[in-house]
Image 1 (tube, rainbow, N blue to C red):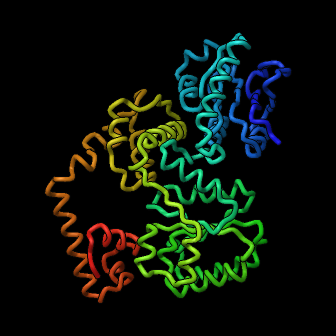
Image 2 (image 1 turned 60 degrees about the horizontal axis):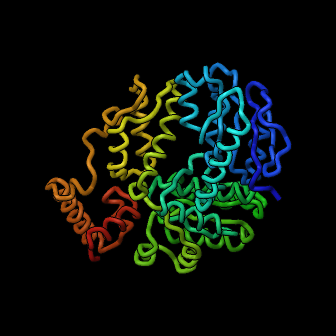
Image 3 (image 1 turned 90 degrees about the vertical axis):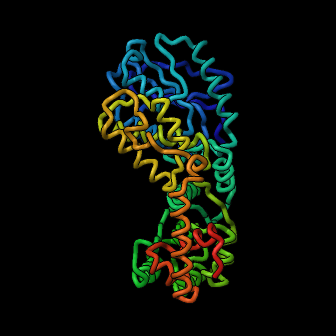
Length: 412
């Protein structure tokens, strides 16, 4: 069994001999290539890594992309003092590392840094470290609770519920990866009903179901005849597989909406986990924004050091109704026009944005809500209360319609 006091030493650059091999409290695991190091990290919970970058002229793009996949590790970079004077290496440390150590190496000082890093990872252990990989990033209590719940699921039949672009698919894929399962997604939004049925018919012969995690997204969009088909398929053809559902309705909305046949309804509510919207995750908004800032700026060949103070305040105050997708789009727009060291709020189109509390009493918002409520009532009356037909006429999804009905307290 892997020791939690292992340190990964990645001899990526100079081949400098970072630390000896014999230490009573630590076990050093050395790798020279990213593929082997990645395989090690995918099968361990080692919390600390040392990256030997000494002697390299600039950060390697392949290394940076690789590090994006291992955010849960506390990285310590080994650099020369000359390297640290360069903007590129300053950004590298800021984007990827817990701390750095300069050459020549003092093992005593380096182990002090390692001790601090190890202590910090112990404090963050409740984050379910194995999930903190790639673009699954968050420290807010509500998001930590979600990670703990998913991490504690020994088997599938899980429903991940939340608004669009809150990370349901990423979390489902990560769970499948941790279980060593092949991840397969079916999305009703992307295919016609007949094609969806034929996809199920073909899947039985494509996979050995004991090694597959099937993710069925947008289940609220499945018409009831298709729900029978899905339930029968899962019960008879894929009973040994793991299944995760993605739903944009709340637990109460699923009960009240009468969208689902009884067997499918019980299947959905077997293990229900709510994913919080981005606007309720506090400083996670800035953490995610920084992740995408560094990633997108690197893709465009830029070296943006971070956000200005006004940009960070705007990111925290903004409502993010489009969740992570909207955040990415705002950051991408800012990066494309930024030629400075720091990205400001105006570049992202957030300069005049205000929080919900600041505009809650403005008449324009009230007028829009009244207009929405009136339009929904008229259409529901027109179609005798049938939500599916009403959603079509209003050009919105049924999930959005039920959310608006609940928000405005509309009786049907």
